[in-house]
Structures are given as structure tokens and as C-alpha cells.
Image (cartoon, rainbow, N blue to C red):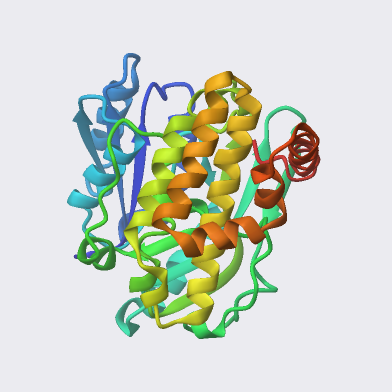
Length: 337
């Protein structure tokens, strides 16, 4: 590997905005690799990928595939990555270039010291009202030194490590056999969860690197679209549940964090089913909780103890109305979709 970091940009019908994403990464120069994956686009995305690859042959590679979804784009990028580190950037998002330069400098410094993961901040960029909100980890993670899971503090509900905040060591992702499912949305949760027990050395850099665009009507995190795709959210949650036996993880703080992440995912599935409001949604809701109770009793117990999941699990119209009220309030505060 002769590049410091590989940035993978999965692209699907991205002609309107992918250029902005790429242009915020290019100033990092020849120390980086950008892999553009055209995921069976029907517009000029493939043409734009090839144009950038021809213009910057020492930095950019373009790959074209039949439509396989975001996860398959990441898989293709990982299989071709030559960078020591690896980061996914969605084509409708972008990086703060000055922050990216600081990140690159730190990665160069730590490349030969066994670093497994670098964490940085991300910023919600809301299209509707042009507001932004940064998510940082200054109250959770040590600064100015490498650390392990035993050094972390408690994450708030708004502070889970997402794809946007994570840079992994490439060889770690390959060693843990990470492979995201095809034709499935919300695979970024698998990406941000499954490799964690393999991570030993971590560094946190308090810079607002990743700009996460929120507000397109066709975006996968749009509430109405999430409700329509609740079955995929449930599938992702089950993959995460089945990926690790948390009781065998001999790192109590990591186990607690991963358990909390699972509870959050279960809560999301439950709330989406409540929002769907169809007669069959009730059966799916009951099946989900029965699946948890039968197969993952610890996750089931943790989820029931969570205030939001407990209320959503509770029978009765009043309890579930309260759950949706809490959800709507949180959504208005955090603008997460």
C-alpha cells in the first residue's frame, strides 16, 4: 500500500452533486486515493467518474458495476483499496477540506504505530432551513493520544459512531471479513458496528471533517422512505445482532456501547412500524420482539429497559402515542432525518 488513505465514493444517479464531493477531497493530493464506484446509474454518473479518473490518474480510479446498492459499492471499493486507511464518503455529502488536511497529517503521523481507527466529528447540513449541527465526542473520548475502549466514557444518544465519523485501517476491515449486503439500505450501521471488536488502537481528532447532507426528498433517511423500507431496517438489525456474541467481548465499555447501539436500532425498527400503522405492522412488531426474546435474551432485556423501547414495546394505544410524541420531539431537536 503506497497511499495514506483510500476514499470510496459510491455513486448512483449522482451527476447533480458528485462533483462537489470529489472536489472537496482532491486538494489532499497524491497521498490519497479516491475510488469512484458507479452503481449502475442511469444518468451521466458513469461518464463523470471516467472523466475524473482520466484527469487525475494518480489519484482517482473509476469502477462500474450493475446496480448492487450502496453496500456493494463499498465492497468494491474495499477490494481495490490501496490506502493504509479507508473512509467512505457518500456522493451527496462532502468533506471540509481544511479539516481533511489535518486528518491526513495525523494519519501520516500514526500510520506505522498500529492505529486501527481514527474518529472525527461530522456535521448535519440541513437543506430545508440551511442550518447545521456538529456532532463531536469531546466529552466521550480522550484527545491528543491513542487510546483503547477501556478509556472511553458514556456516549449520549446523539453521539453514536456513524460511518461519517469513522476511518478504519484498511487491513483491519479485510481481516475481519467485512462484506455488506447487496440491494439493501442502511448498511452503514453494519459498517459502523461489526468491525468494532477488532479495533484496539483509536485516536480522536476534534475537527468537523464530514458534512452529512440532509433534506433530499429521495434520501434513504427521509422519514416516509424509512417507513416504506422498515423491512430492510429490521434485516440490518438482525445482521448486527447475529454478528457478535457480546457476552464474549472482554471489554466491558465496548460491550456496553455495542449493546446500546443495538437498543437504538431496535427502537428505530419499533418506531417505524408504529409510524407505518398498518394491520400487518402490528404482527411484524410482535414478531420482532418475539425474535429478540427467543434468540437474544440479553438484547431483549436491554431493549425493554430502554425508556423509548419499553414504551414502544408496551401494549396499548396511549403508550405508543407517547412513544411517537417522544420521537417527534427528538426529531425536531436533532433533525436526524
